[in-house]
Length: 356
Image 1 (cartoon, rainbow, N blue to C red):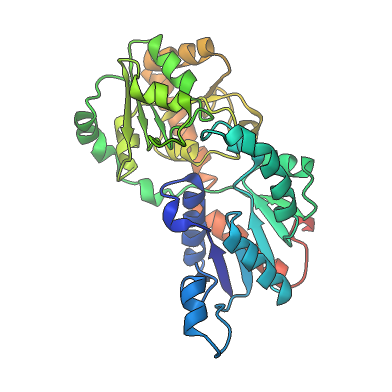
Image 2 (image 1 turned 90 degrees about the vertical axis):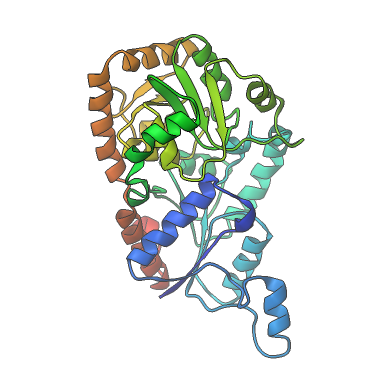
């Protein structure tokens, strides 16, 4: 079985959550012994493939199932090719109109026509995979007419091993001390940037956001305001070469995101046995339990109270961290790989995986 696992614009996406999700799939499939192609063209891109096969066969590489992770022109081409050649087509919904909002300048305006496009695009699939039951409900509301199945993005437990050894060096590098409250990922207002900074202003602890932020005209005014003039106790580190640096340096993971399809970074923080504080939003109801593997909050005051409670109670941090690790293990890549292989085989047999 040869699988195409394709990601439009991969070289330009950097360390995005979509890139991480696709990487998880590929790692999981490799561990299952599945032959994976990452480009649909026999020549890595359509131009070189077309030129090298000019007058001598198809520029397409061979694959038994097409699995696309983004919504761009390359994926449209793959979808059309798959339909013409009766190849099972999976479109993975990492993008919704809702989670596109409050990302870049003008993203809210784009979100409405984006929803119309996504309804058409995802409806072409033989199966739409999505990271959560919450995302499934969002897609059904568009409505997407293809079968939809939720499946975790997973977390790469092995890639996070050894994060502890980065504690001293990362803290020295970013001038951090004491109990450190931290976040990981690209800096967007949708991720709860303003809440993160306002909570920092109400406490004496050090806060650090590990991840890139845009300084281009595409950056939102909110991101520019907070990153150019942050509170005295907030550090924006920018790009981090080894993400284990963040999980080594931090003590309390604060993620007041407004909308998520799952939240890979939350699972990473849990895998690193960190105490986690997240916003009480629908998607987290199906994965995480307040008081067991995390604390949940809604208002700035509740986030501040949760942070202070954890900062003052190392035993509570340890207990939540241990339980969080157990939660993360439920999303291991071996489970992701087994699930994907089962889905591919079901599609190749001509059956609907959502009815099993």
